[in-house]
Image (cartoon, rainbow, N blue to C red; front, side):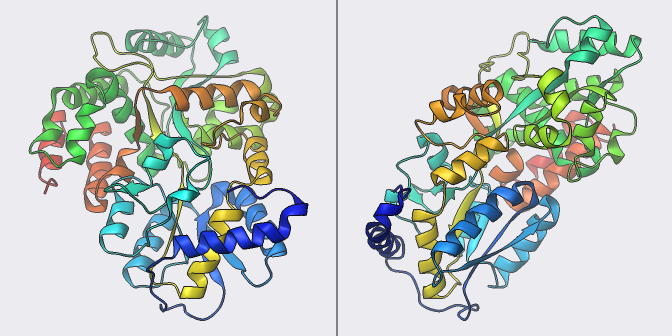
Length: 430
């Protein structure tokens, strides 16, 4: 549903009411937050865009107000688990979709089923990530976010490197060349742990294809011992031993963007990060972005069976509606999803900020944006990828995800061998 013209305000109000009725069919009428307006929690990384969306909604819908609060990534993950577990979650719940934390919300009946009429304008593959067992529980609320290999063209030129590495062997060669030139090869937010996971995700995909992780999601016995994962972990340790990452990377945090700052300030030549990092760099150093920033998909691995066009990352973030909210709050949230989420103004804000909404038919908007090259690359990379694998820590059960980040950190530190990592993770399979 698309409500963008002032002349259709009355028609829009009727349509919104209808959409809300469809969304809320069969929902309960009470909850711990039965008094007051609807609420939403979101991440600080999208604060301006999300604020604008809710401010616009609240301005036009005096009787259906939504109050939003923002949290840092890591703090949010802990806070939302506690809130949902205690029955005190916000009306609109922010998630990454998939079969991890989001599935636990569905299994414990903490979010309500939504109507398929809300999905028609989004990439089907992105919509699917908001479904569990074929039923819709979440709607995309921001950008499609594949992980890319960013690089500093100026530092590459200084070291005599002509272009981004397209194979793992070339990446290792570039690491050696950069080190000889006195340049730190790769930035990493090791203090946040989850950025390390992107290396394992891509290497596993390039070596063994997306089926390797699908087996893990399906809780197949010993699936963490797949040869592709063992090889990927060994390549990570080889990269660490080769001095691939900047000295002190284990104390660099991602939530404060210290890792990307190392790239645009010329302290490191590359970083593996999500598409969301582009917007931050554009805000922090627009001159660097326009003149010296390059990007590409992750390199292929010689002899690997995974398609180099596959991507990993966050398909989008999503809104779900809490089953613990009052009936009125649920209706307000449903009306927002139908008429306040991904409006034309919302899409323009996302594009202006350097992000790509997973919305069909916006190529002309992208070409007319301030960042057409990057945004079109991300749009087409996501739309055309043979496989788009959700970030693993969002795609498996929370306890297993915590163990994954902890054990992988030990691999980076050399405290676990690849096989010891696999044994520890196999123990999490139920």
